[in-house]
Length: 296
Ligand SMILES: Nc1ncnc2c1ncn2[C@@H]1O[C@H](COP(=O)(O)OP(=O)(O)OP(=O)(O)O)[C@@H](O)[C@H]1O
Image (cartoon, rainbow, N blue to C red; front, side):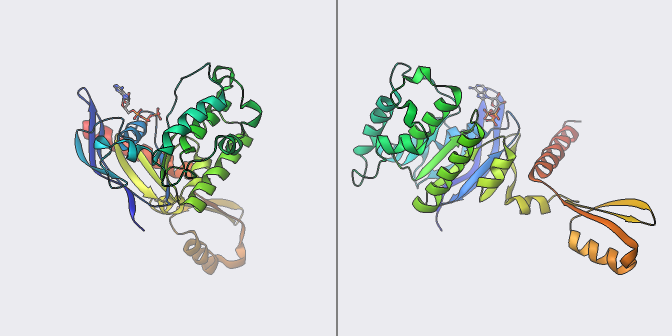
C-alpha cells in the first residue's frame, strides 16, 4: 500500500487561537478513514488544509504526492470535495450544474471516460426525478445528494466528505453508504469523511480517527479503540441471589475465571461489549479532563 495522504505536525491558528495543534495522519490508497470529534475539534479545518483551501502555519503535508498549498488544476482534478455546505447557482437545474462541473474534468482525464457521465451520476445519487429541477427548489437532503454528485463526478482518486449525510433520510443514508463502498471497493478511491453519526462511522470506516482540541487522540478500528479504553466490556451475573457487575478489558478471561470459581452457581450471565459511542465519549471526556488539569 502507498500513502495518499501524509500529514505530519500540522498546526494552524485563526488569529491567536490555535485550532490545530500537531495533526499526524496517514491514509493509504483505497482506505476509508472517518474523522470523529466534538464541534470545534478541528475536523473541517484539517480537511480544508488537505483540500488546499487553507494554509497551515507549520507541518508537512502531501496529498497524492503534492503539497496542497502549492497545487494546480491537474492535482485538483484528482480530488473530490464535498464541503459542509455551499450555496451556488440556485437557478440552474441539477443536470446543468453537473454538466458544467463535469466539463472541468475532461481536460485532465487520461481518457474522456474517466469522468462519470452526468446521467449516471444523477442515478447514482438518486436524483433522477429531480434532474431538471432548479437547484434552489431542492430539499435539504436532495441538495446534499447533489453536493455528493459534484464531489464524485470527476471519479476522484481522493474524496473528502465533510458531514456528507447531514439531512439524509434513512434510505438516502443507506444508498450513500453503498455508493461509497462501491467507490472504495471497485475504484480504490481513498476517502476521508467526517460525521457525527457513530453508527455510520462503524459501517463505513476501515479506520476511525478521533480528534479533539486540534489533536488526534486515537486512531484504529472500532475494536482497537475500544480495547484502548479500560473496562471496555461489562460482565454481569447473579450469584446467591445478588446481581454483580464488573468492567474488564478482557471479557473472555473474566468469564472463564468466574465459571472456574463458581460454576453452576452463576446464573443470568450477561456480557456487554462497549459500543463505539461509549468508547468515543470516554476518550473525549478523558481528554477534556486532562486539559482542565493542565490549565489548573
Ligand atoms: N474562519 C474562521 N475564523 C475563526 N475561527 C474559526 C474559523 N473557522 C473555524 N474556526 C474555529 O476553529 C475551531 C475548529 O473549527 P472546525 O470547523 O475545524 O471544527 P469541526 O471539528 O469541523 O467542528 P463541527 O463538528 O462543528 O463541524 C473552532 O473553534 C472554530 O470556532
